[in-house]
Figure 1 (cartoon, rainbow, N blue to C red):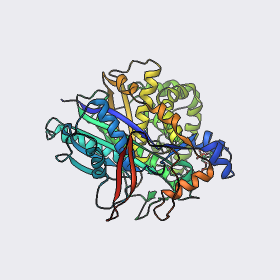
Figure 2 (cartoon, protein in one colour):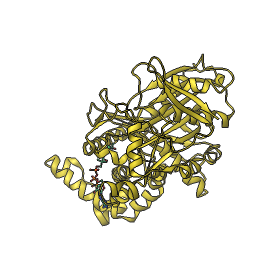
Figure 3 (cartoon, helix red, strand yellow):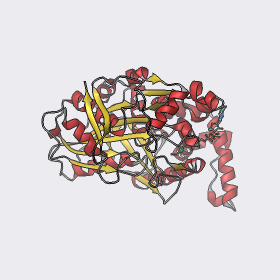
Figure 4 (cartoon, helix red, strand yellow):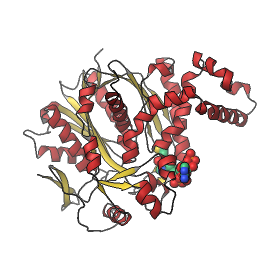
Length: 445
Ligand code: COA
């Protein structure tokens, strides 16, 4: 069977940085520990005045096309995944293609463009769509460009304000991919939920605490569904498990559930039984409440064990490195986690060819999807070609007052004019509104 997956990736971060423990916490009269220890965050990325979901997506895509020596003729689809779209009809991918058209010979006239929406899981769904198009033999030798781009901004004063972020991840999905090949086995957990939504509004309505519970429930269902097709999954099967990371503390909550599931019924569970007993089985309890209490006590004991801690620091912690420094990128978040994991492998000289990743995506509303990926021969070259460290280091560190101003600049209900904080340098920029209220862009040399 043809291998299909992610051939190349590029990242574009918003060019401003809000330091959460140093700048945000004191302004909110909060303990910095809430960010560094509780949520696991150091900073959020924000878009400068001339940045938005289109510029970040187009800039990531251009870097990717230039690096891979691609022309518009090589791209059969452009799918943008976002939950920050500003138009109910015209897809963001048309704006992105318009930007790219202006700098390349040739154009994207024969490229199929679309927009995928299902909160943060939409990027993974767009990869799926592209893979299906390739496997159906309808790609005419061309690859698909999947771009996850978001400005994850919350209303000021909303608890979600602690977990904002902005950036884009562009991925080239192709046959015989250099980076990772996706397994066709996948598991879904999906239910009609109202944990996070934006009914005709720019900033989300969020039930934050509930969203954490919904995330965990849908992940559990997706895991069971995956095992029903792929068989039992054990800790040794995967080098890393990149999860959707709205904030690293969320993944810290999800990890013990994943580990419990991974070791259930295995020799690892037998080995742990002397110290913490066997995992509670629901059938042995009179009520669901008693069972949940027993599970919670078992999990507390489990997370204290060296076996769990070693697994966490090997398979999970490395996936959180970029998220910790940029905040929530919504649709891009799980794809940043994949990159974080592979960067860790490259830096620690870990041989990854043939190694496996367990990718766990989640979108509020709500749906989780989990699938395995196998790392391919070209993974290290791809990861080493990224300039994410340079991008992060160059961000302009905003004060709290500047944060309030830039939040207002990006608030559609406010008309705030302010000087840009950074200078564009060979990138697409937003230049203003056109006669039909469309957004306009140009390439700034
Ligand atoms: N030292 C260590 N930990 C601290 C701390 C300190 N000084 N102060 C607070 N914390 C911990 C809290 O105990 C809590 O951890 P817990 O959840 O394990 O109990 C964590 O930091 C966050 O603090 P909390 O007071 O609960 O934050 P909050 O009321 O601002 O809400 C969210 C946090 C995540 C619910 C909120 O930011 C939100 O709504 N985010 C958007 C929704 C989202 O991202 N959902 C995820 C699913 S996709």
